Length: 301
Image (cartoon, rainbow, N blue to C red; front, side, top):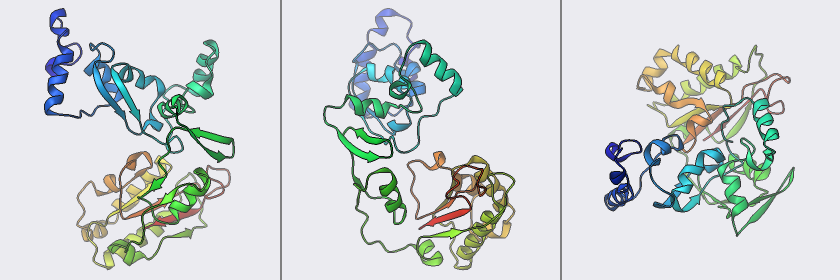
């Protein structure tokens, strides 16, 4: 593979064969996965429209400019993503981003991340479009995928009401709870009135530990759950708190990386599934983020 990636072939005659080499590879391996960061190294010497189809997944997180090189080298592109979920990560300071757009007379709302993404641009270019009502008026999208099969209530209902105008269809159906759900009970909100010096609320962490102890009491080894927070400091403090519970981790028969694999931010678990999600909202003070929901923890089996 590395023999014909961009830059590996210096001879002009050999570079002309790159398209044929990729076509030969696709006879054996029909799909090749990569990141936008690697496109230049892998495809940099390929001329436009050398490849057949490009499939962009999680396009709501993709910087518009990051997708240009890959799209240019494909004859057709399928863009799949949700602009209402995690936005693109922008490394430039916001003020610098604003100044650059202003200098080049670029409409930030239409072209610049994090407001704009590869998905929003694809939606605008789509010949078939739909619309959702939102607080900012109508939100236009391309071809919406309205059937949802992953989340249980109340997570589905809350998301459907605040982001999708009630148009999503819940296709999970009746589902018996797994061993974690049987031990902890149905999905519910657990209110915590705690104090905090940062977005980490120790009382929330203690309640989470109690829930995990309950799982160990039921003899559940390596429970199928994630502990997720919007804030990195909360995820980090939760890992450190749980690492002190050595007997609990032994009861889970957990590998050394269990805390790293099962506790993190929303970005960490994008696209992954578990029977139960414990959501640590953190930020209990009114002056912190999430003021309406601060001091609460949600558990979603």
